Image (cartoon, rainbow, N blue to C red):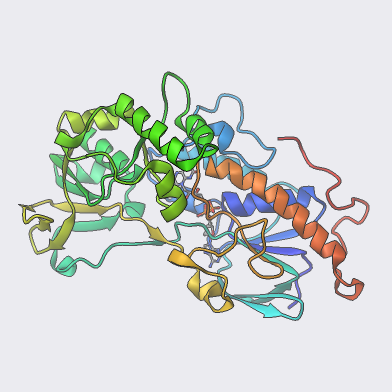
Length: 400
Ligand SMILES: Cc1cc2nc3c(=O)[nH]c(=O)nc-3n(C[C@H](O)[C@H](O)[C@H](O)COP(=O)(O)OP(=O)(O)OC[C@H]3O[C@@H](n4cnc5c(N)ncnc54)[C@H](O)[C@@H]3O)c2cc1C
């Protein structure tokens, strides 16, 4: 089945909707597919108290700002509302409840195989996100544990854990924030298991300055210099946390992001205060479970009633595009939009950098430009007419 769209976009999160908006602003007609029944599904399923750890001005769709009155760090529901509102703009066609199973070359373009049949278009953008498949390590004895064991993506709020002893595994932003919320909301005991001490950055500060404003500036400096400044800043903000089980990270913040795609833990000052007050006890890495407890690296044993694994995600791109030689290390795309990974095939999102959400909007505009150019330069027999022939490609776009 040939689609009448210039571009099929897989994924209706920030990257997918930003791409669709930039394309329609450029006079092209995008079709957005998502396996969920609503847009922004990744955000909808995140925990109730989640706020962005990136500033609202660095986290909006291209040329579309958050409404007046939105806080410095939009809440989960505000980002869902933002995506939903703009996904509803004229010129963005959505086909929800449509899971994409595989993408193949087809003639000069691409065939997108969905559970409901095949769609074809000259251009495809994959925007399925970095957080598609939750990862829970296959620890020895995992299946014998008689307590509750969940991934952080299934955590909503602290209510079910009131009065319980809880072990949170993983000291990224989510793990630290969940541990803090549990500790402040009636859990009997909260441990935080840390394998590799994280780089810590303050969500806000000094004063009212959003942390990612500073991080974005540091991102533009030579990496070693940025690491040294960030390390000094963390020391000023948090002090030496070695006696609480959190010695300084071995790899600098920016080296870790650039070389390993490893993002720092972005936290509020209260989270670190709770660690200093021993409301959250930092313990070594979890190495094994049994029916009633867990063994930690170094041999200690603790007996939590629940284990929450903030142990990250896989990209889950292999079934879709693994056969196309477009994936590299850690299952990440070899090339990110606006660059094409294969002629007419691009990956949007998949970014590890400060202000990632807003930067996706900037890249979306460059991508729309590149796609408009490629479609214009195709032999006329292969050319799909523009959705609105009176409006030339790239003729209109709102200012950011
Ligand atoms: C708890 C948490 C908090 C975060 N906070 C921030 C933050 O504050 N700031 C920030 O910049 N980043 C944050 N991130 C990172 C964030 O996930 C990404 O920046 C952002 O969500 C990526 O947007 P995306 O559009 O690329 O992916 P997503 O928002 O994940 O959207 C991908 C979409 O693709 C769909 N999809 C996937 N596979 C298929 C398929 N096969 N067929 C059809 N549809 C499919 C999914 O249903 C989903 O709707 C956070 C991540 C987590 C886990």
